[in-house]
Amino acid sequence: MKIAVLVKQVPDTNSKIQISGDRVDLSSVKMVMSPYDEFAVENAIRHKESAGGTVTAVTVGGASADKVLKDAKAIGVDEIMRIESDSYMDSNSLQTILSEVIGSEGFEVIYCGKSAADTGAGSTGPGVAEKLGWASVSNVTDISFDGGIITNSPAEGGNAIIDVSIPAVITCDKGSIKVRKPNVKGIMMAKRAQVDVKSAQAPASSVTIVSHSMPPAKPAGKKFDGGQSAETVVDLLRNEANII
Amino acid sequence: MSETVVIAEISKGKINPVTNELVNAASKLGSNCTLIIPCVDSSIADSASEMASVSKVIAAKASLFENYDAAGWAQALDSISPNGIIITSASAQSKDLAARIAARRGISVVQDVIGINGNNLSTPIYSGKAIQTVSFSGDTVISIRANIFDAVGNDGNCEVQVIDASGNVTAAVRELVERASTRLDVSEANIIISGGRGMGSPTNFSHLEKIADTLGAAVGASRAAVDTWDEIPHSMQVGQTGKTVNPNLYIAVGISGAIQHLAGMRSSKYIVAINKDPDAPIFQHADYGIVSTWEEALPVLSSALSNLLN
Image 1 (tube, rainbow over the protein chains, first blue to last red):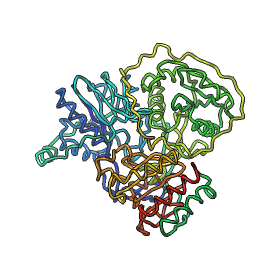
Image 2: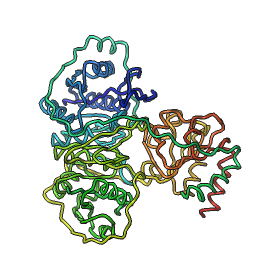
Image 3: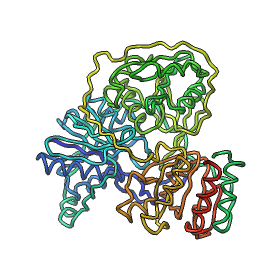
Image 4: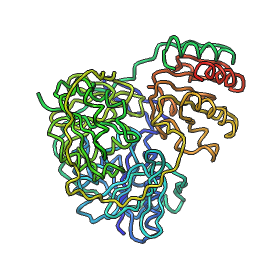
């Protein structure tokens, strides 16, 4: 089985985001693998351990994005690949180059996080699947590899258990599995690992960034002392906020 | 004027009221609005004939709309939607659908829109720690956050056209759905009551569940609570690495207000915080703060709500 896992470098979710001019200033922010991508890496490696084959971590970006690939390598992927890009791309441009490269490399299953911790959009997985004409299952919490790929994901009123036919894209949420951490040997191997750099021609973006700003500050609320004041708050929720 | 298509949000076999908000968002883009209702039984579309600001209602009837399948739904809805701007809700399922329809058409998608100003769209980034404004040109798929735009009224009048959308769509995924009865999910709830590590133990979440039952609310949790106690599943987690929510009312109990948690709930319409530490950061974001232990405040809250609502 030839497996790919898409990974993205994002600001640490504990970091404070600052704006400089009208753009987000990430110069003093620690960059890490997007948290849901960690589950994608774990599921990809488990899939390989069950079915055999190789796992390739793929990212899009400039040379600074090699760090997230090395992190994936240290955890246990076999190959690391970066699609060269140094500019903003909208969803269509990004998915076009990802699907072109993935399609030409002969992958059969793609894992990725359910969304990246920066945009939170969650468009890449299903979008790449559509461009490739593949099936996709999103927000998967648990996967069994006994006799195929059986995923568990939330559905209205319960959970959907899906027997996924390949080729397919599976986007991963945090589930009951624990992700493995890199060991010393993995870190040493990652240092020496070569990044396979690909170039791809992206179509022009029809969506462009105008500005970044801080969310509007909320006016100061009312604060009360003591548990008895819960009664006052219920009254305010009914008569001031008109919400209950 | 170009056409705008709104794909109705369907919950439990009915049109979800958030659809009225989507139609309002569509009208801000200044176009004729066609409302498409994915359905198995076209009678669910009847109520939409009165939705204001809609010029055409299409009941897209197909058996595949019984259960969500990303590829099948995208193919069926793409085939009956005219060119133009397509609007969906920003529920997890509809964002997935929006991404597939956009990719299918070779156009872009902008997710989680909270503001529309001409061709400029604002969306939260870093789970709401900042706002990104983008400009779009040409046909685009746009998903709209709930509880942001006002809902259009039901004083319109237009005909419902039924279209067979089944075509030759083959679901690419074999699906066996196991429906378990679970509590209301935080991502679907209008009211959420969440507990943090300040609850002391996972068994104490029963006090939150009791209030949730009175309010028809979902029970959520902070990351600290989920990471500390195995009994509190990740599906309850609100925050940047959990679910981003914006209900009408969010009640945070024993939650200090870590940046991670605030990112996931700060856009809630009203926030109530109960915390024994008067300096907890959560109070800076609360409309109504109660400085108290949960042991003192929750029984009072519970009985006041029961008296009011039962």
